[in-house]
Length: 157
Ligand code: NI
Image (cartoon, rainbow, N blue to C red):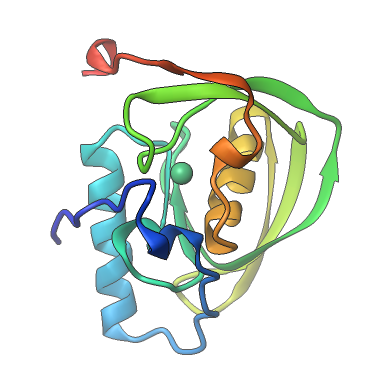
């Protein structure tokens, strides 16, 4: 496993649409392992492959319940709304208010090639929406209400 370099806002790769994963190769497993390591190392709750420079539809999320690895994820249902602070490893040191659905259901392929569904509320719903947006070349700063503010991550260490 290895920590990969994070692409930050202004890098054109973050604005591209990622491609579907059609074959789960050893290289894909290695990418997923690296994405998880990179997410944990940087105290993120989610990471999408384009953030490490790979235009594939892969996201990893951990809101504190263990890793969720989703290939070709698709939000198939959403309900309610929540407004709260959101940040992104590709926009370091910043956060801003974003409104998202409060509940989502996502369909995705697991690392084993089988299809699954996950229901997420609150932070997990927010993370799923945020990471799926990355696969479309969208960033939360496109949706932010008001200004971005500075955040300190010191207390998370
Ligand atoms: Ni992000």
